[in-house]
Image 1 (cartoon, chains in turn brown, red):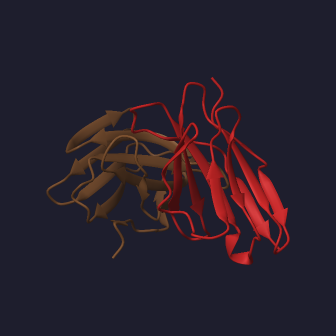
Image 2: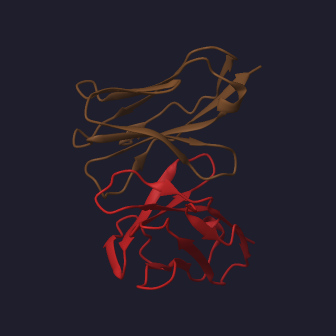
Length: 111
Length: 113
């Protein structure tokens, strides 16, 4: 069993839709949870990260962590074609450690 | 503030040759991480370095791979006697001290022919 599971998709939605991206994990030691966006043939770009359980909002993006269920989510409101990319979740037990990534979900937002 | 820089962006090597990948972290960042991304797979950790020290190399293959981050200059990931299975995108990330967030460079795409 992988430490971090993420549905690879692809996920296709119409412009303006609310997108929900999810990851599950098995290691209860994870404390920091991140979301990266990766455009084709580019490096991953950090969108946001959260510590422990709870919600964090940044513009159209909301990250949610439920440690009791070992489940994290990223919501994108009013999705745009420019949001079309692969979204990677990542997590780490402590500061300054290796990130454990999910496989990534490929998202396509159609105009 | 320039981001993480990696070069070359594309590298073609024949089987048996050596590949050297370079990474310059963001200004003020003293921690460097290397990750590998194979087609249809997520990013896999390889090694974590601070200046002149290897902190965690648990993801590095036991043979042919080495990494360094000298006091001066970029971090280097070295792959000796490359094989076709080494073909992948190699990403470097950097972070400031005592930070959890890691910032990635554009990657080096290695092709072994």
